[in-house]
Amino acid sequence: MTFNSYHPTSDSLYLVGTDKGTLKMCDMRQTSNFGNSLGFASEKNPNKNFFTDLVSAYSSAQFLKQGKYIAARDYLNVKIWDVCNSNKPLLTIPVQ
Image 1 (cartoon, helix red, strand yellow):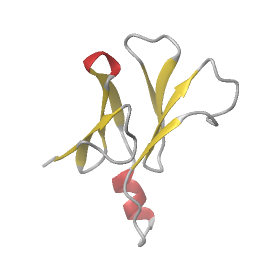
Image 2: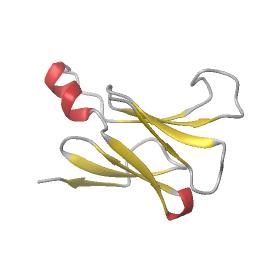
Image 3: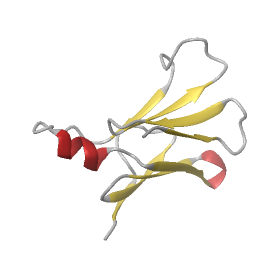
C-alpha cells in the first residue's frame, strides 16, 4: 500500500510511503521522478524476506509541528523523524 501526506505549510512538499519501508519527502517543483527527494528508510535487515518487508512497510505518516517532524507508523512501531536529519529516527515507540 502506498500513501501520501501533504506538508502543512508548504504546498509543494509531500510524503510518499511505499511497501518497501521507505518514506520520501518530495518537492513538486522538481521535475525528476523522486530523484531529488529526501528519503527516510527503516533500518537495513540482512535477513530480508517477505515477513520483514511486511513488518517494515509504513502504513501511514503525518507531518508534525508545522512540518518540522514526521510521525510514521509501521507494523510494530511509530517512528518520529526530524525532517532535517533522515539518517535515523529521533524516537521509536513500540506499538503493542
